[in-house]
Image (tube, rainbow, N blue to C red; front, side, top):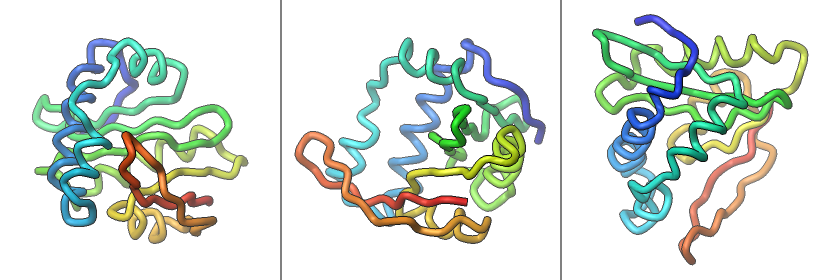
Length: 148
């Protein structure tokens, strides 16, 4: 596996990886109606691309396939971190996180972690600041504001 910077040509694949990961990996912690409002399958690719370009965005590649991605902004907010369903537990998220965290050295890092991702971040030294409910299309999703 190797890591590289995001390019706009990646955007559509990242949106697809996001959808598939949420609907497979996060299904153990969220109901189907929650998954459907979290990852609708219709992201605004132009908006995502601009966001990825503004942030430090890292893409993980294995066997010529994108297997994960993550992004962090200048303030230390780790926005997205997703790993392909077939590459879970192989160090992909850790490698991406190492790269993202080192890009904002000296700053505290904050993320909004899903129920599924919470243990991963706790193992990396993040602590829960608060549990929160995010409402999407009238459906509540639990996540955690976490900080390192």
